[in-house]
Structure formats: C-alpha cells, structure tokens
Image (cartoon, rainbow, N blue to C red):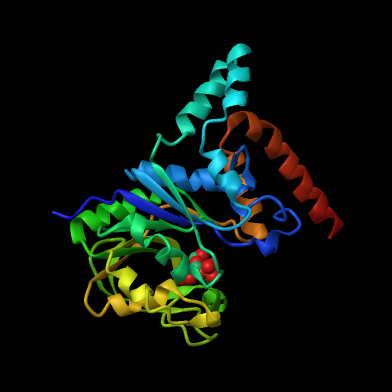
Length: 297
Ligand code: G1P
C-alpha cells in the first residue's frame, strides 16, 4: 500500500518578466485563459487528483492569489442581493475549503529547488505532488490523477514527461528512460537540467508535474547550485535516484506552456473552442483571419 498523496506544492514566486508590462502589477499566474486565471486550472487539476491541501510558495506582490482563493464578501453579497445565483454557485464551487490552503514566501529567487524546499515544514514527512503553474495540461483525466494511479501501482517518485523537438531540449529538464513498465510508464535511468545543445540524453522533457517522496527535502537543503546558477529540483531528484525509484509517465493530454506568449495564446484558443457559444463566433473569425493572412502572403 502506498501512502496517499494529500498535499501539493504550487511554486508561484516567479516574476513573469516574459509578460511585462502585463505582469508589472498582476502576477503571471493570474493572467486569464478565457474566463479564469491560469492558476485556477492548475488547482482544479490537483483537486481532481484527490489533493486535499495546496501549498502556494509565493513572493512579493502575489497577495491577489490568496485573495482569489478566499471568499469575496462584498462581491458575493452583491451577487446575492441581485439574485445572480449562477455566478454565486460558480464562486462557491471553485473556492477551496477553509483551511485547505497554505501560503509561504520564497524570500529570495534562488531557483525552483529552493522554492520547493520552502514548503518543507508544511508538507512534513509524507509524499506530495508539485505542479508548476506555468504549464496547464488539457486532458480527459487530470494529468496529476494519471500520475497518482501510476504511483499507486509503483510507489516511489513519478514525473510527467513529454516529447519536445531536439532543438528545444536545452530549455528543460530532460530524462533518460530504462525499462518500460506499461504503455505510458517507464523507469527513469537519469536526468539532467537544461543540457547544453546536442548533449541531451533523449528528447523527453520534464513537464512540470511531480510526485516526490519527502526525502527530497534533505537533499534540497544542501542548497547546491546547478544550471543557470540556481538551486535546481532536477539535481536533487538525481541524487534521490541513488536510493529510490523514479517512474516517468507519458501522460494522456496536451500541455500548454503558459510561460511563453505562444503557449498562453494557444491555450486561450483551445479552451475557448471548447465552449460552444464562443466557438460559434470564433471559428468563422479564425478562418477569416487565416485566409486574409494567406492571401496577403
Ligand atoms: C522547470 C524545471 C524543468 C522543467 C520545466 C517545465 O524549468 O526546472 O526541469 O522541464 O520547469 O516547464 P523552468 O521552466 O523553471 O526553467
């Protein structure tokens, strides 16, 4: 029997410089995909996987994330007095239960490994999940839920992976696989953070979803710097591989890197086209735009 994955860490301290000036006063995690902020999609993915408690590792200027997951008293009171039942129910449904979120601050931008380490006391001695909110994953079954199923069968640590073009491997953590465990799951033989171009062991990137054992924290506490001079999660995972198993999952679904403008806009289009009323207006519009563009070329 494996221990249940109850808690998830969402590191949200990043500055979002790629989206300036939009992210000058608004955290990048609060940018909108159709009608809800990016972070909401990631929280929903976690909840659909049975996560009971979410730890946000935040930074300065991120308090609106805490506000977003709180009750908005004046707004809800006004909606009530105007009989806006549907909107009220939506807010109610999306709000996490009282006491099921924690917020801690990463005081210095020392890297992803350091951000996760900041959550060590709140996580305690149990396996937990990490979801990087730059990435949203559109799938039939929550990506983290797919990982929890693999974890229940194999125990140890689980990482979501997907293929990237060879010329992009230097931008990500890359894994090397060994034995195949099932159609989508394999044992991991090695991993490297942001390999120099031409040196990657494969084209399988770490997608930003992890299930890790708590022993990762003592390795992170060494605070050793890796790629880019940052404390990297991948380096501590590699160290943990010496004593524990790591399984990769080629998840079913599609990821959108909302840390890039093209990924963010693609996610907006993909989620909008899923809503029949929006699709009815958008499809002719998109056809028209593409035709005009092609005619001009
Ligand atoms: C982080 C991880 C990297 C992973 C990537 C996914 O990198 O360190 O292993 O592939 O997220 O988005 P970052 O994007 O923070 O540079």
